[in-house]
Image (cartoon, protein in one colour):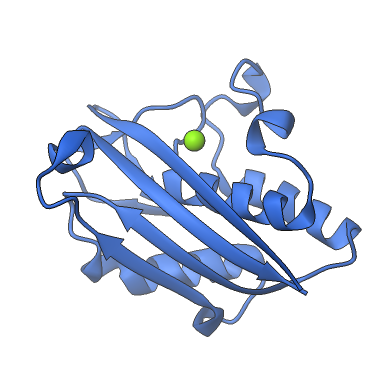
Amino acid sequence: MRVGMGFDIHRLVPDRPLVLGGVKIPSPKGLQGHSDADVLLHALCDALLGAAGAGDMGTYFPDTDPKWKGVASGRFVEKCMELVSRAKMRVVNADLIVVAEEPKLAPHRRAIQESVAGTLGLDSRRVNLKGKTMEGLGPIGQGEAIAAYAVVLLE
Ligand code: MG
């Protein structure tokens, strides 16, 4: 068994779509980034790479590479999963946290869980998603950013 954890944060800006776990969420603001800026999948990628002992996202998907511009982050997860299988491992479960003041995650939890599980090739009961706020504190609490944490277990 090997455990990995990941973290990511992206700035919330107007005129960008908000994509979390591969699901487009209705929101007046979206996340800024080189790819689709799916902060949750980025945290998940780093957790997968961490558990596989395979470095971090910047190693494989530098934001200076035009190849990754505007790309759906599910592609990053697919690449990370290739590295996991190359290490002869598979995912047991993933536990995910999105830290956002807005929008509320609850109405989208199931869709996100199913989307992430699909990308990992897992039953959706093996993907758990928690929504947290910052109680109005700091940049996330002020609605300037969204952060995500991910823990995965590989066997
Ligand atoms: Mg990122």
